[in-house]
Every structure is written in structure tokens, then in C-alpha cells.
Length: 176
Image (tube, rainbow, N blue to C red; front, side):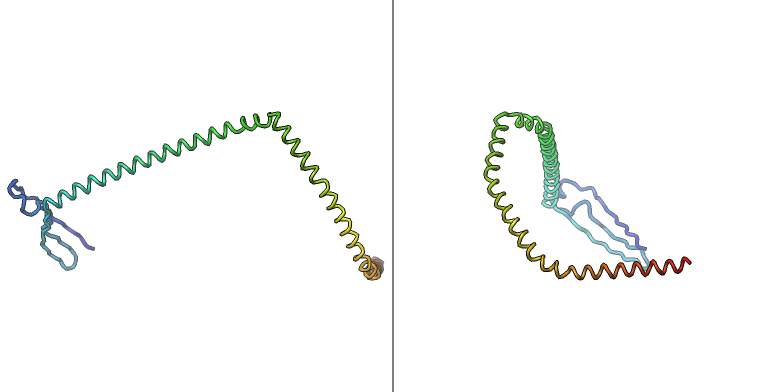
């Protein structure tokens, strides 16, 4: 198990000591375990590093503020979008009923249906004729097959009747 101890020192500096090392310096690190490591070092920061750190903090705060503002704007957009869909949902049945009640639309629909019916009737007659021809052709092809299968079905029927009769005879013999 390791334990770390840091000791920070902050000497009191006068304003004339600006080029001196930073008042906050890590003076030593102790690691306690089976063996103890002692190390002493010092890190100094100057005026430039301090200004850079302050500027970095200001930039971070501004970035966070902008991010928060953009999230708020997105939430506002989401609210507007959900309100739009809610309005659309409420308005759509009214608009649809007004469109359906429009007599011009009803007349246009009737005219459209009559035109399509007139266009499709010859096509329907043609399809019926083709289906009759195809069914006649299939029937002509199946008649020879049916005449070939008829004796096979009659033979199968005779075999099934013979099996049923055999079972009846055996059941009667068991019953006596």
C-alpha cells in the first residue's frame, strides 16, 4: 500500500520579487512503502504562464456558456417543433373534412372514376377472354392425364375397400 504526501509551501513575496520562482512550489514528495523515496524539486511559473492560465480559464468559461446557450436554443427549437406537430395534428382533421365536403372535389372524383372505368372495361374484357382461352387450354391438357389417372384411382379405391373389409372381418373375429 502506497501513501503519497505532498507538501506545498507559499512564501510571502514582495512585489519586487516578480522574477522569483512561483510562491506555490512542490517542495517534496514522499512515497511510503517498504522503502521510502525522498525527492525534492521545485516548479516555477512566471507571469506569462499565469496569464495563459487565466486566459485558458476565461476561454473555458466562455465555451461552457456558449454550449449552454446552444443547448437552450436546441430545447427551444424542440419545443417549437413539437408545438408545430401538435398544431398540425389538431388542424389536419378539420382541413381534411373541409376538402372532402368540397362539391368540386366530389365532382372531380366522380369524373375521374368514370373515365378510368371507361378505360379499364375493354382491358377487363380482354383479360376475361385470355383467361377463358387459358382455362380451355389447361382443360385440354388435363383430360388425357385424367383418363390415365382414372384407372389408378379406381384401383386404389378397390384396395382401400378390401383393407376396410379385412379390418371388419378381423374385428368381428376378435369380437366373437
